[in-house]
Amino acid sequence: DALARFRLTIMRPVQPMLAQTATDLDDALSRVNPAVVEWKLDGARLQIHRLEDEVRAFTRNLADVTDRVPEIVKVIGALPVHATILDGEVISLRNDGRPYPFQVTLGRFGSSLNVEQLRTERPLSVFVFDCLHVDGDDIFDRRGSERFAILSERLPAALVVPRIVADAADDARAFLDRALERGHEGVMVKSLSAPYAA
Image (cartoon, rainbow, N blue to C red; front, side):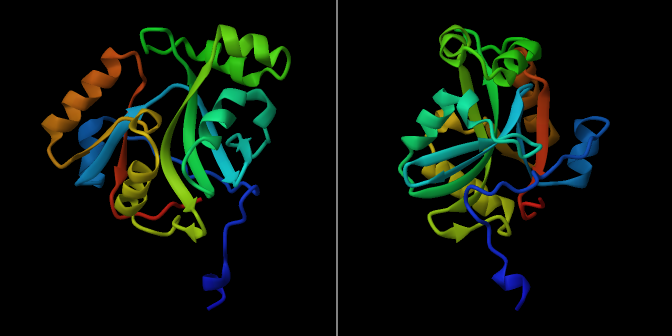
């Protein structure tokens, strides 16, 4: 009963869920199968909170960096939701959609000076991979498959990190190859049944 009273508070960030490493794709799929396989972007982790017209953005260390990411605030503020907590990655992309080196994203994300100029020169894009809360419902303790479905229903596809459900290693390898061809780090392998473990 005491645990049931625990609630997320929008605008108060929580520790992010962290990944474990695997030696290769076969190793990862031997631990989690079937699994969601999604692109691993070499950007900066961002937890984004929205309550009505207010949007706040927090780093993985829970620092408020809202003033550094005005383009992300605008995008999330335009979503058809009243309240949400999203977990994702921000990254600076070239015109062809390929990522700039991590240092470019970090330099853009890490600076609180000349934000408007930097925004024009090196805009940030956000790719969301999880949802902890939506419109009054805490969903962090639901199965991954439920959270990912809610995310896909509520966000435009362009804002959701590319992902597939794979139970065959060949499908996951082809997806990994596409991520690498596009200049990304690799893939993440996630459980369809696990809750969000902050």
